[in-house]
Image 1: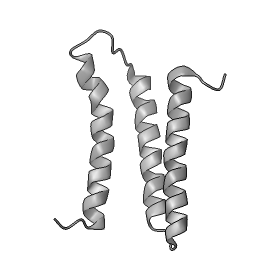
Image 2: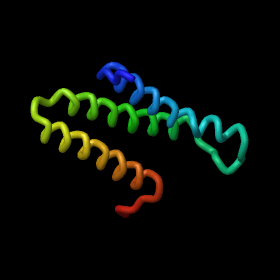
Image 3: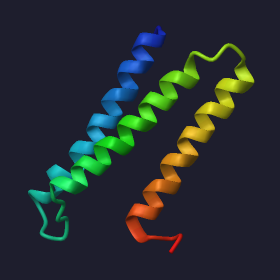
Image 4: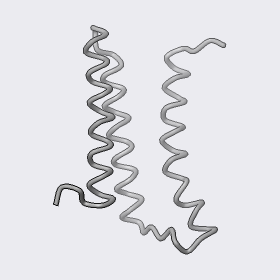
Amino acid sequence: MNLTPQTIRKAGWSLAAALLALPAIAMQFTSEMNWGPGDFLAAALLLGATGVVLEIAAVLPRRQWRTIGMLGGLAMLLLVWAELAVGIFH
């Protein structure tokens, strides 16, 4: 299997779209999942911003910079997600 950068990029953005679609699918089967348009917008912005950060980090010239950029982007995703979900910093 040949993993080209384009294949990896497509897989990453497809994963982001699938993660955004999961709540919409879950809402069809349970009443416990209750997202409004604002929730979907926040999730789309969060996943999109993370994707852009990872795209930028992927083209950095040094391997160490790429690693730090990607780990930093993922750390920011987790921190913002945790704050939006349960408000851990309040």
